Amino acid sequence: MDVLITYDINIRHSEVKTELKKKGFKDNWKSNEIIYYLPNTTLWYPKLDKITNAQKIFDDVLDSLNEGQPETNKIKVDRFMSVPAYPWSGIPGKPHS
Image 1 (tube, helix red, strand yellow):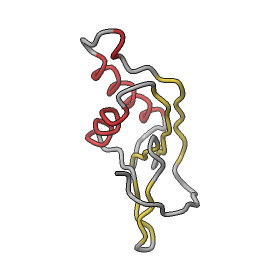
Image 2 (tube, rainbow, N blue to C red):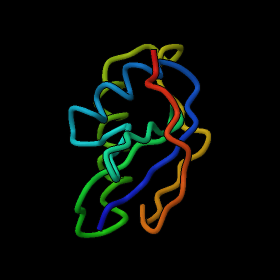
Image 3 (cartoon, rainbow, N blue to C red):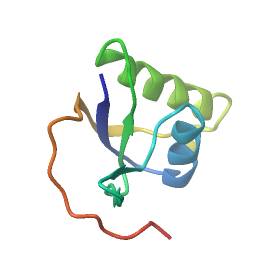
Image 4 (cartoon, rainbow, N blue to C red):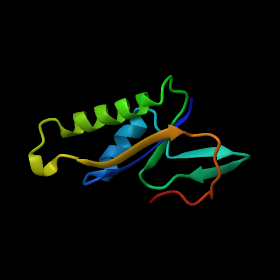
């Protein structure tokens, strides 16, 4: 199933998003020749066996980025949610800068 995640973290947002994308998450999708850009801390992952696998990947990325960091540079999660990505409705938006 395709899984959508959304999260709030305290710091290092671009690092987290970059690493999640390296692990297979995407920040947009194409439907009927239109590209839909997701909100900044919302991503989706295609074809996961279980919805909980999305959180496992997210947790692994944070663990890796936090390894060896001083406490003041550790990423802390305030909120996280994973849900099936379909059905959906949206506004295309523009790419993030």
